Image 1: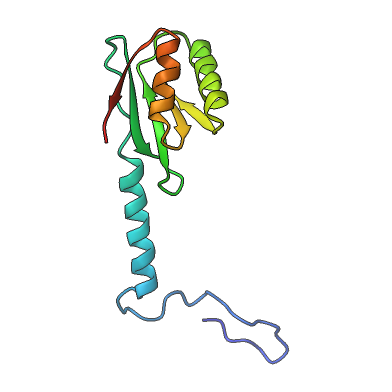
Image 2: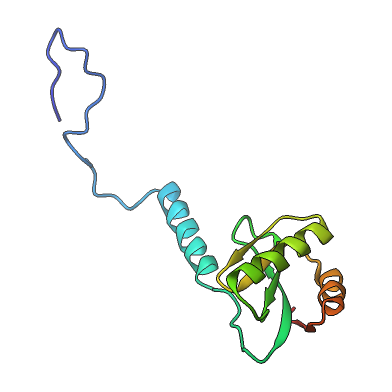
Length: 130
């Protein structure tokens, strides 16, 4: 640790590094536990697309605070077609949403409303998951 001279304005220095070899504080343990919990939550992944032509509506949790979200999997078509379907779903429900790969994510649990909407568009729809 640097020793301040008489005319120095030094208030604090990290030159000495960690001074004690004690166990990590409870605050450090809590932070580490929170980081591990976050890793588990994001490593779950999205439901796979079986590719059988059936649109599946899953109820899941978003990565933002664990709030409920409706996951739409199995819609055939191009990326632009998926964007149009997502836009129509969001407008019909009045909620936000996004697309991650071929999975559409709509904020909130709206599986029944989305099932009716997608069936009216000619898709074969199943409710999947919890």
